[in-house]
Length: 261
Image (tube, rainbow, N blue to C red):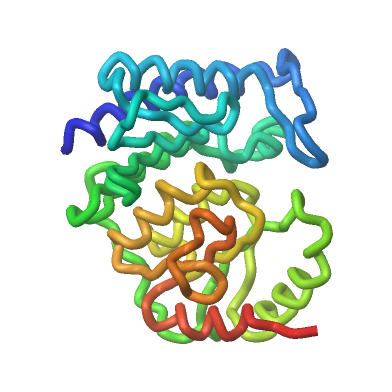
């Protein structure tokens, strides 16, 4: 395992331990509202602090972009760590067991390593550029699905962008009509990891942040899948719009998402 990835795994497991301890007594959670339908707890902040401490001990000159604390520049760092300490906070608050830790590493603007860790199930998804994707120690690949009509498709509601609900509703209707089924579990990073592992055949969502997508998208690419924005272009990390699928399903997914009024 690459030293950078090994450090990311160490940080993710440390954050996962904090999350698991807090899950034993959710009545002690202190919940704050960041924005409409967007929450943060002391667990998010504690997990993020543990991750950053682990990373800075190993790589003090690297830059960090984290959901709760923002961006920290270290000179002109070639490496950027992209961190979501608890993707699926709303699920966690309610005891709905679908949340994860997501840590991605960029080198000179390109994704190099990624970790998605599900602490509740103790499932560790990892990938390094050019070295494949793994669930624990087992190599994973996207599914062999070749047609959208046979695909199980993951999605996420644009809860931060209510102005796009009508557009999304048209996309959802189209997907329900053309796929084998649609699932919305509420943790985009874990959904993307599931595409990489073949548990979902495709995924799309709008209104995401870089930390929701970075690690999971690399997992998919290293597992043989395709990732793009809703037009299939590479600007998904900046636009917050992502579509991902098996190679054969990807073009059909993009056509289905290109709905009009």
